Amino acid sequence: MLRMPGRMRRAGVTAVFAGAAAAGFVAAGLVAALIFSPPRAFLPAAGTGAPALRIAVAQIDGAALRVSYRWREPRPAMAFRVVPGSHRARRWSVEDDGFALRAGAGVDTIVRTDGAPFAAVTLIVRPDETRPPKDYSPVAAYGEGGALVYTGHLLPLGEDGARIEARFDFQPAPGNAATAFGAHAPSLADWRSPTGAPAFVYLGPLAPRITARSAALVDPAAPAWARAEFQAVSARALDHFTAAFGDAMAIKPNLFLTAGALDEPGRMRFSGDAAPGQFQVTLEGGAWRSPSAAARDTLRLSTIHEVFHLWQHAAAPPETAHAPGWIHEGAADIVAAEAMVALGYWDGAALEGFMARSRRACAFGIEYGALAGARRRGDFRALYGCGVVIGEAAARAGGTTASAFWRDFLIMAAARGGYSEAMFYDVVAARTDRTFADAVRRFVRTPHARPETAMQALATAAAAARAGAGARPLAQGGRR
Ligand SMILES: [Zn+2]
Image (cartoon, rainbow, N blue to C red; front, side, top):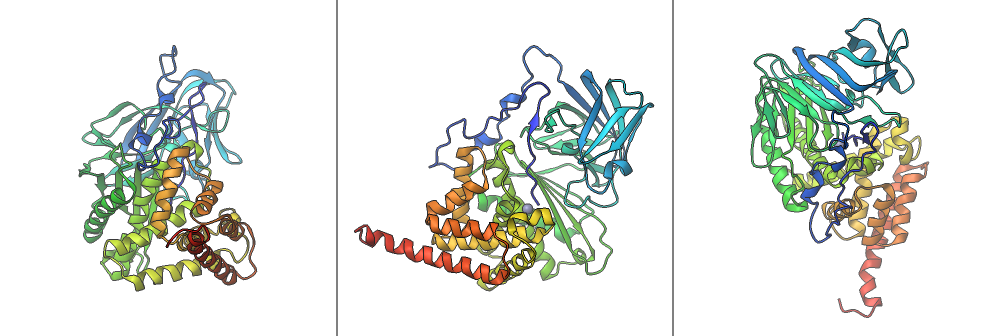
């Protein structure tokens, strides 16, 4: 899964990211290293001295945290974007007297019960039994009494509804250390994410395994074969995508692997959470206990999918990422599937099996409405399956692979400082023609009474575009 992190905002200063567009991206190059350079807007605002908000995160017991907020100016309330499953009402509490945590529509709010403004408040944040549905855990038990913190859910919202940029102080429990990106230290003081976006920070006894291309934090709770496979496949995928798409990682990316409950026989759940420069994977279910062909296959494909999200995040700065999920999830799936073949894990038949599964998932996911409304309906499988169907059609129409299509797409995304649905159709049209781009748009926007027929029509349109492209040089008098 990939969640575009959304905008962040300094109190009183609108954040302007130092995006690739502003830097004048050269298309001949690749997704540029400059994208992960620290956003200029997050330097302290002139004349203010202290940041508007400091958040001190202390690890008190395993994955339980004491989180203290200190504002420069008093305020009447502190609002957070809601975490599904009434998470905060169940797992967060206010340590100070005279405060209340109120759940509202879309936001959770902390206020003083007497209504007075406040400049400081301390919360106790506990991990949940299970992951919130389709969202990240604010804190998860991780690695030998450690905690994996997602800063996005600790950041309150500004008046415009965007998360406020804050400075963090992370204090692990005695004997533990804090790990985030390249940093691994007894504590992190005056810290902010080097990507300018919400990030994962690990507090605990484990040390990252640092290689040329990544810093991996691998929980011994995961089965030994899965840990070895995860490290091997992610290393190979990082090399493969660096060769294919360029070295986009100015900051060494973090890869996190852990395991939840592994007792339920036959269950195999892979949950991946991607953030700029990081992803974290949780394995759950008894099927992970032994390295069956199915478990190995899923671990490889899904890990490569998460690795590709690193390149997508690098090309699309957070504030401009309003693209629908089928674009980035479908791309991560089809590019990962092609990488499975390139890396020798799959043959052509295995790839065709994957395409067939994706077509079925797409048909299932758009049975009750257009792809454009799939996320709203909760038809998440459609985002992956139909994204693959579209990616395959776009690649075929352009006479190339999905990876080659996405290389062009990432270059344009980096040049524009982000990507959108309109840009997707622009890239399709640039590689084929407007007729085919319009066919893709109709496929996305129209409710289809017969999804299989609609997918077949898209494939036919792709073949026609391919034939048209083949004829064009002759029509222009060129030699073939
Ligand atoms: Zn994903």
